[in-house]
Length: 218
Image 1 (cartoon, rainbow, N blue to C red):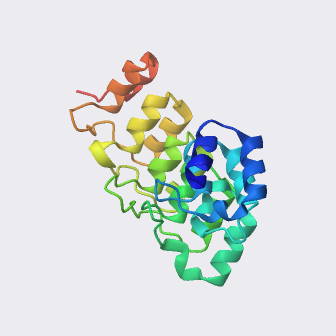
Image 2: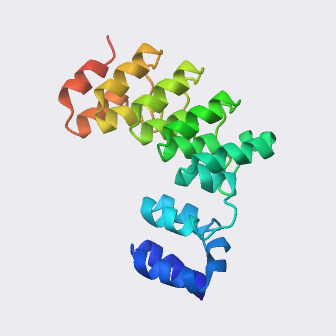
């Protein structure tokens, strides 16, 4: 019941109530939620970083995955120092430390992990086939995407449903990100399941000029 209550508080953005609950029952911060992930990671997925950081303060030692998701650089460096082999491990929900750092846009952590040997071309192990570059583009983060490409990330890998990084960038309407991907060999002719091109997604979102740029030549 307590963990369900904590989940509800996270979902409803009730920071003060969360701090009060964990002050009384700090062990809840270490329990597994009904989503089979930690409360810290759950808060991160709900895009509630302030809450995630607050919960993290009640955890005696964060896991590598939680530290990457919540943006605790010092914790990440210490954990990698203690156990370098974990750098390319997978979380319970199938993501690598690098994938999580990219998705939650923690550039310093992503750079550190790549520097220490994190594989940039490893997909998630959860049926979604998400690569770090997909996560970086989904986060609309130019710097991390560039860092990954410079480190050898493949620009045309497809996640579930055939979504390539260029599809996501087109949908976001981020011209700088689009140009970056094109400069690194992203293909405008890639089609998702159902046949949509990056240009089609840009057009659907009202980015007419971007759609024109991305239209394949006859």
